[in-house]
Image 1 (tube, rainbow, N blue to C red):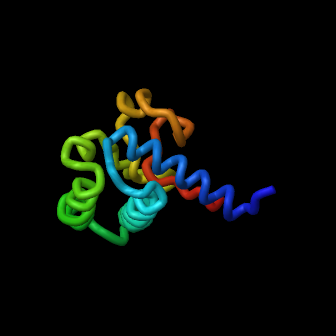
Image 2 (tube, rainbow, N blue to C red):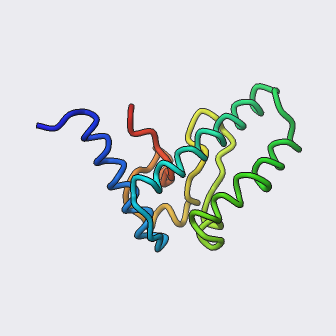
Amino acid sequence: MSTKEERTYQRIVTHGRTIAGFFGIDEEPAKLCRKLRALEVKANKVMVDFCNGDTTDDKVESFLLGYLKPRLENILGVEGTRLVYINHDPRGYTLKLNELTSKQIGGHHDWGGYFILAPDFSE
């Protein structure tokens, strides 16, 4: 029998393999997921701050274009990043694949059918 940590790690690896295969990325799956998860956490914080009135449209745009986009391009490539949908509602995940692309990839989806790039598998 496996431990909860082992099951969580296996889910992360499976998710990472799905992303790597879909985008043609040659990177260790868990490392790929860690990178995307770190971006998800930062992006979600920005969206929470925006929703709470603690930051401005300009700061959000600066974060998205100056911080998030280049890092996503480094991970997913320019073409891959074009498939990403940035959810501005902080109640859900921030980094998703667009609606059309989400239908083309198996794996972790939200209730709306969007593929989640960096889910929290520890829950």
